[in-house]
Length: 273
Image (cartoon, rainbow, N blue to C red; front, side, top):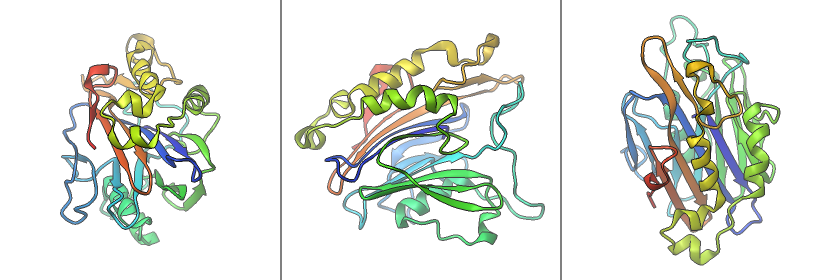
């Protein structure tokens, strides 16, 4: 995951609205959102077919506590060298078997915590993990040596690979736009509508427009660091890009979930729930 836009307000009729953009190698296979994990049969999310985890998991209202967890790769370096895959270098010590960060949203969505000690955390590369339910929201971060937690204030927060960084180009550019158009569907619309634009309003338009803007492409010298949607063509011919977008709306009693694996195509959105 590269960007998570979190609308959190425990006093609002819809306490959690979330837009999550996943950036990954486009040839890395994944399964569309569903209930893929026997260990956590109630959780819903897309499944990384290579490592078996997910970038976002949600526990629906029929669970003990409805909750969403979404992970972003952590980054300490501000810029990415030309032609280099834009992920954070590993901090896993020599001799320690690396574990996939994709298991972390599953743990967090199921229980509200990671439930891992420091020795276990050393097996994970740095990350930022959004954990939110209708009453509270936080960002849990691991930099390879320290685990920290920051509460998310009510409002709309843009989380990027450097965490809660309001000065990051993406956050500064898009935070106000998404805050000004935070979805507020009526209870009837939230429960019954099959129109994602009726549920999430202008957020759908903002996401579609961001994906249709070719300025984000790193090919041909274009590299817009304010763009929500990424595309980097590597020297070996592989492509790293935003390959899916998720929209959630969550209350104590209702979950709505929309997904597209073709960002920028308004007709490609589908309702998962």
